[in-house]
Length: 239
Image (tube, rainbow, N blue to C red):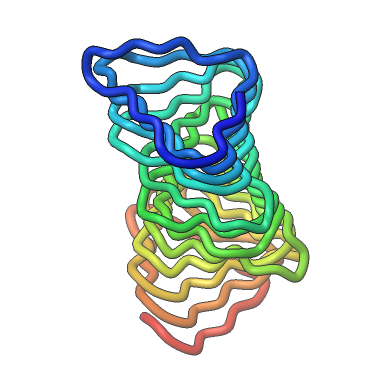
């Protein structure tokens, strides 16, 4: 089934069975029936939108997010080995909570909107591109950046509860955030604090490595046993 335009709304009291082949190519599909939804094959969102108030569990396959919007108050959960693949040049709009239990991978394009990407402690988030990520990130699983000569710009909340590994490229943080875990900055990597307040707190929190730390705006706080030991740094703004 290809949904190529217009809108389709399943509201309270209705029922539906999702087809085996599911590509959203321009339609806005709203699932607000009052019942949880579950699907066990790959979903491709290329344009349009997928959302609503129903919780939506994807239990097999991948969510191939190439464009369009994820919206609504219902949590979209990718269970088991199901992956979130963010790809393609078009902007993607995040306006709901997406919970990833295994792997999220950002390959290309920008992510706009004010929703939440929640990576569980069983998962990880790999960033392989530069670009803008406006939503909020809760990383209970590992965060990896490998984007040589590119800047991944996070302007929403950035909450790291597991290791952050910056292997190549620059992670720019321009919103409020915190870390209770280690930021490890490899020789090809950099972290830039460009705005908001970022709070490293607790004995497991650290900012270390042979890479670069750039302080260009905002406030960075180390407290309650957090540590700092960077190979190089540049301070041009902030506190």
